[in-house]
Length: 200
Ligand code: GRF
Image 1 (cartoon, helix red, strand yellow):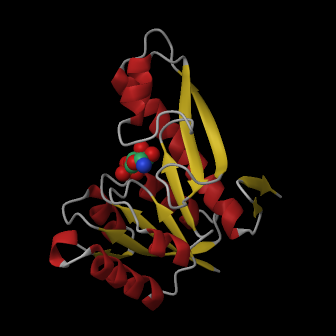
Image 2 (tube, helix red, strand yellow; image 1 turned 120 degrees about the vertical axis):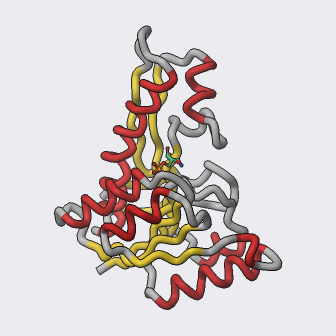
């Protein structure tokens, strides 16, 4: 079975959606580890309540990025991690790290990539005035919000939507989309062909 590590820095609602999908047997995998760089993050409490081991790695405890990532790799190897699931981890992984786990790191982004990259994607899309935005799950490569796209879900922005209501709709879409993409990965149904991902 696939051993999964979720990387998160924030609330952890995607983490909870994944925990639920694993518990229900929708994803046949072990959720073995949470890697978190923020001791006060909601994700830490969620992992604890679900009995998921947490590796807390604070960037300021390490001299450089290399030492920081080496510690993370140590935790990943200890738990024999096969798949890394980024869910709001607010640090950019080095090209060396991404290379080491190439094809085995997923990320979720709250917009329809390649539109609205970056960390304010929902607000940016709302303020731009687009009528359709959404969520994207993709493989991570060396560029931010750039790797091959696995699944996308569109979310329509209605006339009466506020930024808050749009955020809720997108998070709801994410909580369905991410477990589905992880399931496909764990069942060996994702075939990477250059930039394109075939769902078998
Ligand atoms: C999500 O909106 C995800 O798309 C982005 O970070 C957010 C994490 O939310 N990468 P949560 O911590 O899972 O609630």
